[in-house]
Image 1: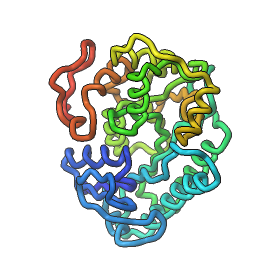
Image 2 (image 1 turned 180 degrees about the vertical axis):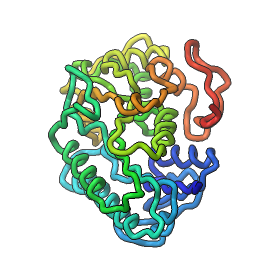
Image 3 (image 1 turned 90 degrees about the horizontal axis):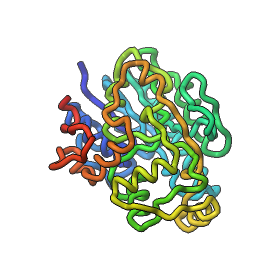
Image 4 (image 1 turned 135 degrees about the vertical axis):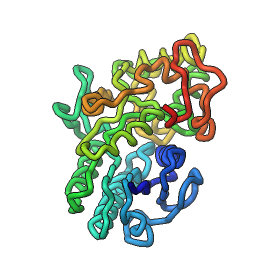
Length: 332
């Protein structure tokens, strides 16, 4: 069986981890991105501009799976120029990959395309799953809608399965990541509840993100999948759990007004913190996926012992009480 995995956006946060994960699994990894900055060094690297055909299209011939993680960061202010970049980088890259797959003599068996759990509405009343979840509104939801429409309308051969990933916040102890930002706030005494603290957190340990992608190589699976842990604490509980893992007894709260002001200063959007994302992974659960890290306390304590890409893929010398023993990814 062909073992070629083609990863677009391979130099991004998720792409670096995914490239190393598949390389450690013995797969032949082809990493595609606009430039080498941030690339993990795993596999073969090819450049593209996210729009036009080029030598990268040859990598898709006979590949086991194409995984598209491309897209301009949403951690920015949503002014007109950034809105254009966010939308175009997702829609154009998805369209380009679809066109390339359609032209393949031996197309990939699977095409996995990134999406976002922000497709669902602000929910504090009940979880949103793939079958009964309700779409939200606003710019972020419009981005996901256009992204998925482009993906599912791509006229690729029937032999290529399509899987869209509505992913929550993936946690890894990596500089600049969501985990890192929250950790730094907590260690500065600012790790209290954000806003009213009732917004739900849809999160996923990086281990389980990587394992879920491998799980979705199953030839019987297609369509939309929510990639989150099965537990969804509200922000107040999540921050308390994180503080306890860090040994910080208390943290100053931040009102919604403070977050909006701080977001301007940090050149980001308050929605990233204040929107309630209560997204349940019904399809993963029903298909038999088993989470290694389903509970926040264990997951956060574990991640504090595994800073950075290199250490993430090595066993830790010690593990926190209550956490399950960890083995290098792929050994069990």
